[in-house]
Image (cartoon, rainbow, N blue to C red; front, side, top):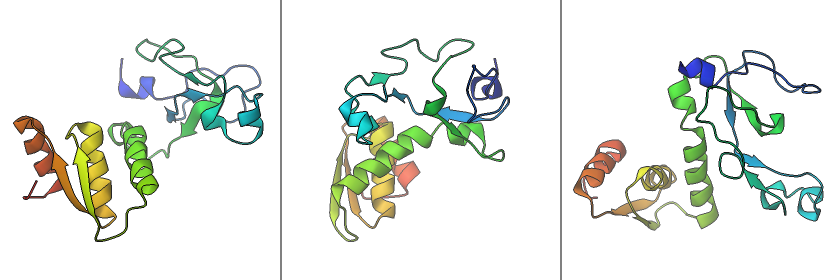
Length: 153
C-alpha cells in the first residue's frame, strides 16, 4: 500500500462536491456536528458533540478510510506526501507559538524535545524567540540540535 493510495481520494459519497477522485488530501481529524450552539456560532472547534476521527470513530490504519468531506484539505499536486504528513503537527506548533503572543527577542523554554516540542522550538526560533529546550533524553536532545541548528541547547 503506497503513500499515494493513503493520501488520495479513492471514492466520493453522494452529494460530495468539494473534492475530486485522485486529489491528494490531508485530514483535519475533528468532525463537528454543525447543529449545536457552538457550531452555529462558527466555533466548530469547540462543538458540543465534537468527534476526533480515529479515536471516537474508526481510524486511518486501514486500507481505506471513510471520513466526512468537510474534514479534508486539498493539497497542491506538487507537494510531496512526506512533507504533507507534517502539516498537522506543524500547524499545532504554529498555533501554540501564536497563542503564546511571542515577541521577537523574548526567551522561550520548551519542555520536552519530542516531535511536537522540536517543532514548537523551530517555529518559536523562526518567530524571533531565544529558545531553550529542556530535555533529559540525550538522543532526543541530539536530534533537536541537528534539526534546529542550535548549539546551546
